[in-house]
Image (cartoon, rainbow, N blue to C red; front, top):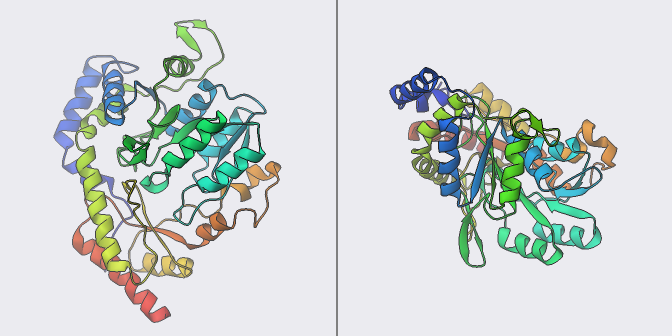
Amino acid sequence: MLKVPLFDLTRQYKGMREEMLKKIDETISNGVVILGQNVEEIEEKIANYVGTNYAVAVGNGSDALLLALQSMGIEKGDHVLTTPYTFFATASAITRLGAIPIFVDVNEDFNINVDLVKKQIESDKSIKVVIPVHLFGKSVNMDYLKSVCDEHGIKILEDAAQSIGSEALVDGKKFKTGAIGEAGILSFFPTKNLGAYGDAGMVLTNSEEIAKRVKSLRVHGARQKYVHEEIGYNSRMDEIQAAVLNVKFSHLDEWIDARIKVAKRYSNLLGDFVQCPEVPGDRTYVFHQYVIKTKARDDLREYLTNEGVGTAIYYPIPLHLQKCFSFLGYKNGDFPVAEKLSRESLAIPIFPEIKPDEQEYVANKIKSYMEVRS
């Protein structure tokens, strides 16, 4: 029996071990391990890559959401619209500021339904910010969303935690996700397409005001050392994680290309047996995850586990049904597409170094199960 992990960080490390160890040794040897040259370097690289004026490195992607929202002026009682089908941090960042998450349902492609965003904005005049999540590396329809938000004077904070390198067309021009709204965020969690060897995140923006405030908030609200204008946080990307990202950054586009090739191979192998991800013509999909859909999800997952295939469910409980958000008053049935996806979605192994025979093994196991079931 072949063992195929959902994700394998060790294969990637083997190819850059010497370069990585050298960079980390240089970092520790120079004695600057907090907010030094490596952080400045990765901030500049990411800003240039994404196409924003500023990129501010912070402790993790969850903090990036929080600091970005606060820097955009979100306060207690404000309404912030987002999706119920995403990682917990997207909504918890809102509530940590005392603001109120307002959910709208998603499309079958896992991303927020922009038509429903428009309806909600028209009915709720208190919405201050919309957070679209480019889930699994597939960009949201930002052309339509931006036109809706611009019309109503609403700011956009892009949750691009899973989508670095993905693009969307806006007014006929290509923009990378995270560079379209007033601000965007990235996560460099180790499993991301560009991952650190620990926690790290970043806020992206073209606004000097937002960038300055994020830089202050990440060091306890101090723009000048020991002079605190507001109560902030301790959320700094450390130099070692920045060094790791600087080494990895030069490989990002080749890793994205490899993921896209892996995804195409899966779709060719599995298209007749399960619902595979669809790639829109006007946007790109960088495949942080490859997520299939089937009503037999739970049984299929158990079978694959027994056959040595790693899988994951993103996400088993939509946010509106999480106990911690029960105070919002949502109930089962409020967002039927999100609830359906939580029962049918299954992530299967994808990473740049996965081998074709491993993919074929995964696909053959899925085929054999689905054929027997039918």
